[in-house]
Image (cartoon, rainbow, N blue to C red; front, side, top):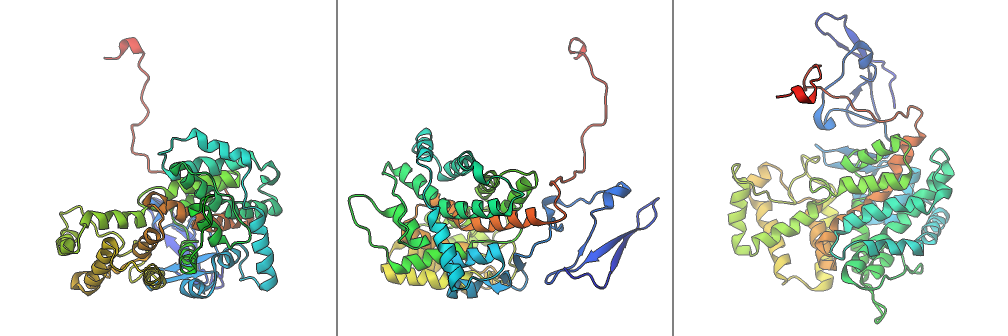
Length: 433
């Protein structure tokens, strides 16, 4: 962080001397006012949702929502999605640089070494009802990993943190596929380390012992891009949850389980599932105009899911790559005539031409296309957020590790504006009316 100018801001409050704060400038993005010592003067800031608060310094991901920019360690997301693969992006997020050939081979080998889960862990699944939501299973099973790996829970040891990172990235697809297989009553499929990371996941998801599966390379590339485009997204709700849990000294498996729980919220990780539910509600292309009118009506609760983005006020930089991938998948599977996908493409066409959506910059975002892709691949909608969790694990771990490496680490302790009752006398039970 560069602070050569030593600029300051001054706050004037009634009955107090002016308070001066340093202004900190990052390498990109707006400057921030350092109010960390404001409590010394008896004041806190009030910022619901932390919309104007930088809770940490980070060198991992940069977002400019107005310009539609998303950078991982300085690399544009589109370049990574088009030219790299998911494990390279994992290495980049964890280490700050893209790997050379030797580093890439070594990293892939390390991941493959940890793809199996302890056989005793498979017994955990039997305690869940078959109809359990897979995210409920993921929260429990990932948190339980800490019971199996006492050798890597010393969070002040960088080697332990690195080992935990490898284990989590490697085992998340295995656990996710086990959750899916359990819901079907099918046997668990063990990982095959001769396959790539994404091939292995699709193999564990869709193969059965009685048949030899053939994995379509177009679907492998599509899923790889889904993983890349969801690998990290700065200080979102789940990442902030991981950081907050980690600031207490909690072990990495507990922290990632906390992140999964936060991601499960429909306002965070359920957007692509909401897209499919919306398409099913619309039902037919003849009803699109009706639903677009509902979306424009401020008094109607209906919202067009998968259009616009809370962070990106112009366009979602991930959407272009995801759109291209979506069309590649539809071509490879020859599903252009599938009613759901025809409806999605018609909705995309109409919304992109409608003056209201153009004026409001409500363009299709990454969730619109990723939902269609996952549905086409055969991923059930209740597994969509699980896919998100697999992809985001590396981002969570990178932020957790960065936080623990910081010299100014403090346990998270947000303040509050208390609006409850003032102190009052206790009344014995027999005297209360």
